[in-house]
Amino acid sequence: MIRFTSPAGASVSMFEKDAKALIRMMGHSGTIPSAIRAEDIATALQQLDAALQTTEEKSQEAQPSKLQGQDAEEKAVGINVRAYPLIELLKAASAKQKNVMWEQDRSFF
Image (cartoon, rainbow, N blue to C red; front, side):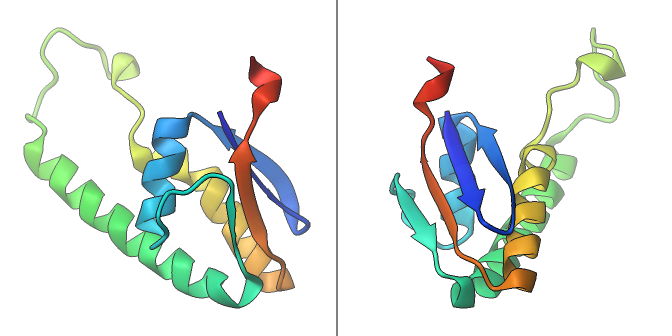
């Protein structure tokens, strides 16, 4: 698990695979631990939004019109949904001019 923290809001934890993907979408290397300085958050948020938009468009093109053998409730949770708490943390940090840090969260193990 990876935990994103900022003095601007509540921490966000997610699985490492998803966290690394989102970190890379923000224009960072995926290194853990690391951080985004307050003055760089707006740019990171724009890059993340653009990458998620592209991902969503590709996902919609690749999906069949009906899920075979699955109810709508069983559909996998997409990266866009998983990104929402992080996006909210980034927006809060940008508004309050606070850094965002991330690190391994060992409390889950």
